[in-house]
Image (tube, rainbow, N blue to C red; front, side):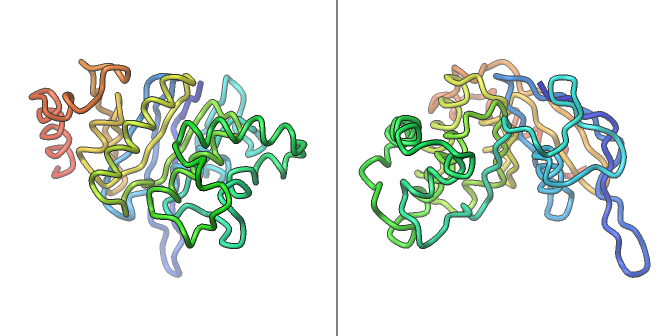
Length: 247
């Protein structure tokens, strides 16, 4: 689906240029989620902006189904860390926003959005405003807004970092279920080793201009659940990922 080839990014300061990463290459396929993990400032969010088309690469290229990514493709959806909800709009209005911008009719919007909000178990909150929602509910609205656009690639920027452990694990399970049912590609940025292992079948470890791409195989996305979190294999991968982060 997505090919990243020899991608480079840097920041330009007053006196010098700081390389964030260079010659980064990997692939994103439907049904094979990719976790991106690393310390603050290593370029994780920059990579998501490049994959979404919001930012253009300095060097290298990103191909979507063999064509250069240009920011106009409609099959990529980005969910930001702080939800991006409009405080003066209700849950339904926020979840419908992308479709309204694209010119869908009220009837079409209702037919698309309501089943998604039901799947996310927030259909009883349609008329509430963001200030009346919990963190987990806000995140589900943001995810619902992204899914309403029927993307083939979902990009998540630390979406669960501010949530309590129970809500975080519930939403992790939900995301895997949604991506499996819709056969979505998934790239997920996180600071959590456990989250990276649970959500990713590949882990892109980024640090100080370098990167490593690890395979987290043995348990397919469809088989990941509460028992996987307790397994020896899960903890072995957590320890492996931790060792790469310490290098």
